[in-house]
Image 1 (cartoon, protein in one colour):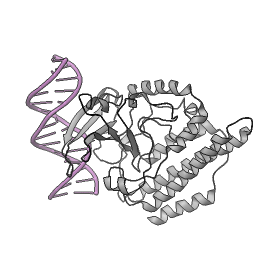
Image 2 (cartoon, helix red, strand yellow):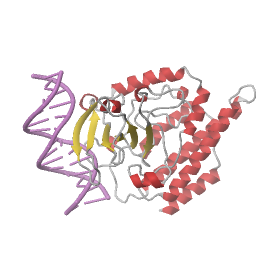
Image 3 (cartoon, chains in turn yellow, cyan, orange):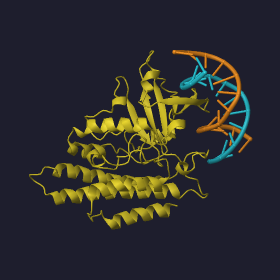
Image 4 (cartoon, helix red, strand yellow):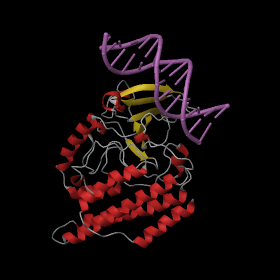
Length: 312
DNA sequence: GAGATTTGACCGTA
DNA sequence: TACGGTCAAATCTC
């Protein structure tokens, strides 16, 4: 999924619309000045915008492929690559003995390989979840030291944790986040959408193109720093590949508030293609919106879809 | 001895 | 066919 320039812009447009709507909703959330109905309209519009973006991304993801691909989530023995949800982080560590320890992201990983990668000065290490055998967790990550700055590690995550440690971690986070005002979540979720999708593993694109970025963890509120990325001396920029919609550490990126997804089945595997990801996101929409029947400008979205289709 | 890491070989994809 | 990702035997650590 490389040459998707036009659809990328289209997705940006849709996501930008979502951000605008989210900001508007934040402004309207003062109960003394706005009716519940007005908020509902905005929430629905926001979710529709994200749904449209997902649909566009699905189009982008499907179109270039001429041969059928197996879905990783349904074929766990498949060695086919690039079908896993995938995203990367740039982790900056301070030098010293604790350097490697700062790469700890709260999960238990087991190293299963290391390779010298062409054009890079440092080998790439391959890790899989420790609970792969015991709980069938298929999450993996790749860690590679950056050439230009050896204090920066690029961490590429693939697949979603389905193991118990993920559930425990999310339950803990959820409790922390629930203590904060839901209204803040909305504006912060929208502000996290920085740029459009692209191949984030291509350093050239990283420089030349804006990025479509989500947090590496469920950062729905700027005052809540996920516990396992809270160490000092670290900065993380998370950037997700075009084929990725729901990072392993969270399913709630397209929900306006974590308060609305408490009962979402976080253990459900999202190691899948777009169709499955979308199907997993849908319950969030249903759960939070109920029977509201409001959508964003249908004509606009249709034209975006046509743009994407025409591109291929 | 169990579990983790290392490393060369193997395999699928582009 | 080169490259990247995974496997699995050997080795290491606790």
